[in-house]
Each structure stands twice: as structure tokens, then as C-alpha cells.
Image: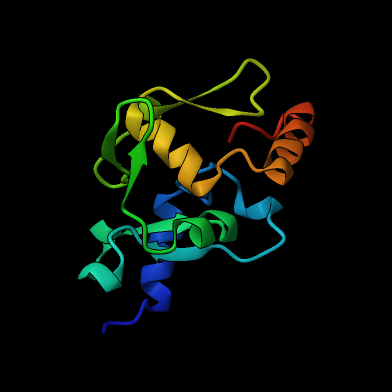
Length: 138
């Protein structure tokens, strides 16, 4: 099982511009280190290659765990979670008027918000403060 080297981690952080690729939290305002996570988990044969790696805050990483798809009550279907390497964030998500809540624009967006709890209370509060300081959205 290949390890995530310092150089690979640096590449992933730079590609993500220092933001969680799911909730858009910024590393510079985080209280915990961000993780380089496997989009397709190693437990499901995911490889340690740049195309399968994303920068994730601890909250998103913990909620995602090894999930890749979720049941969507709205469509009565199993829907794949957002894939940062294959999909564009702005096609699946948007911000509400005061930029505190992430809104799902698609089934993929909705299930990802639910599964990863992208609008956790602490994040919403942080977004509110950062928006007032002109630091959010990133």
C-alpha cells in the first residue's frame, strides 16, 4: 500500500488551494490538520494516486469514511458522492445568500451534503464570522 509522501501531500494541498474539497473550509482557519483522503477508499480498491486523492478537513474526512454512494430519498436511488477529481464543485453546490450554507444543486450535491454533513453548526458559525471579515467564501 503506497504511502502519501510529503511531496504528494504538498501537491494535493496546492491543487486544492488550501481548502477542503468538500465543504470549502480553509486550512489557515482550521483547528485541526487537514487530511489527504482517498476519494475511492483503499478498502474499496482505491489507489494512492493524485487522481484519487482530495484534501479534506477532519470533519468531512470523518463523515465520509469509506462512503462512495448514498441512498437519496428524493429520487429513491443510490447516488454517488461528489468526486472532486471528476466533477466541478459549482455544478453540484452553491452558497445561500449569506454564504453560510452549502446548497445541493443536484442529487450528488444533496447526498454529499447529507453524508458529509457539510453544514455542520461549527462550520456555519465559522463561515458567518469569516464572511464578516471578507475571508469567505475562499
